[in-house]
Structure formats: structure tokens, C-alpha cells
Image (tube, rainbow, N blue to C red):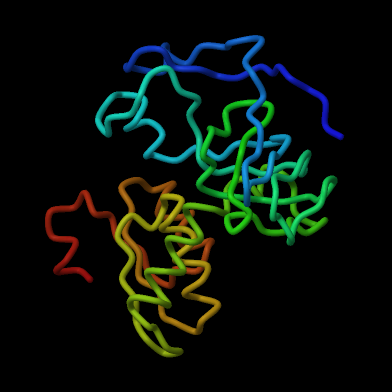
Length: 206
């Protein structure tokens, strides 16, 4: 049985810039409830929404531990968990207790196996970016092979995921980015053409 009762975590007690991210020691390890899994966090994903919440733009109760995405090893199971077991390598999204900590809680439905060829850091980057991209392209746009798809902000996490998934689905990807490095990154990840969206007439060029 898992016996750790205290952990280190990044905790926010007031809204603001990066300086409000403070290391807290001796934080209670959360206990998994029905359908929940306790995961030992090996890597935490960082998403734009984490910064919005930290700055107070999205509300939230203080104090709290940031982070929704991550990857790690299953440490303990709550009641009625059937698809995970202690020791499993997993990636996950929508943690209910925050991933900027040594341990976090995740609903079992938000956990997936992490293949051995993927690092924990790679696993932590899958959740919000790739699920968002897949939902946009497949569930909402219903793209087909041969479609031409325009991806604004193709150099961001969701944009790069869209480039990769769209290319795999046989689409012609056109991207936009705001820097030369970003444009090259989008091309390297599947965009056939990339335009700088800081140019006043970039839509005419497209």
C-alpha cells in the first residue's frame, strides 16, 4: 500500500506573475476517491491557461497547485478503478489537484498508457495540445485526405499538433506564425507553406 503522506509542491497563495510560484514543503498527499488515481508526477505540462489562472484572469480559489497535464507512474488507486494498476507508466490531463507537485489526482478516464519509447516529458505535452487539435480537426472540422487546412498560430503547442495530425490525415497544411523560427518550426512539423501573420497583407498572400 502507498504510504507517503507529505510532498513538495508549487503552491500559489496570491495571483500575479511567475514570482508567485512558491515551493511548499510538507503538503498533504491527496487521497484518491472513487474512480480516481494517484499518480507520482515525473513531468508536468505547462499550458497557457495555467498562466491565465496564475494571473487571476480565470478566477480560482487560493491557495492552489497549478497544472492540468502530466506524466508519471500510478501510485495508488481509488475505489472502482479498473483500467490502471500501481506501477503503470501513464500520461494524463485535467488533474483535479494540480500537476506542479510530486503527486496528483486524476480521474481514470483522463489517463492513458505511456509507451516505453516516449519520455515522461513527451507524455506531459500530449494532453491539452493534442486532444484539442484532434477535436478541432476530426470531431469539428471532419477533415478528409486532400483538404487544405489553414492553421493560425501553427508554431504554438496546439498549432504544431494540428500540423502533425493534419499531415498524417493527408491534408495540405498552411500555417501562420509570428517569427522566422516559428515559421521554420511549423514547416518542420508538416506545414507545406507558412506565412508571417505579423505582415499586414498576409491573408492576401495566402
